[in-house]
Length: 123
Image (spheres, rainbow, N blue to C red):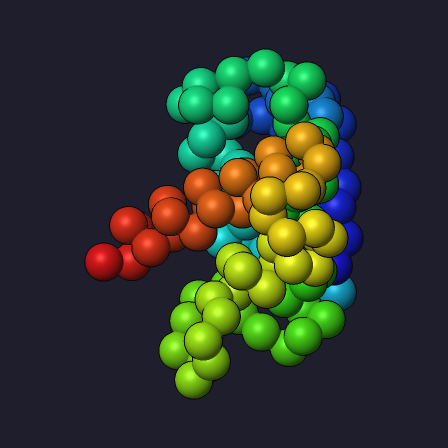
């Protein structure tokens, strides 16, 4: 998994987006679901500040790296286990959900937003 940032050469709708996060798989192919989420939320203004691009990109990078390390897919929800992927990811961040740092909590919220959005798109 790789987290890159775009140069001014990334142009969407006639506007340059330097510093836009881009996630790539180890094969150097797009991490499509993550990149679609980033484009959708950043460009429609849900995540308005460009200062938030890096931490949001980092949160998704951490989540997809977690999935890759455990040979899981983001939508692998029927694993025959009690815990969900989100619970496993939260645990991997450290703490018990009540004692996490603000950074851990905000990263978890980004991933939860991604997960909720993707579930809606696939229903």
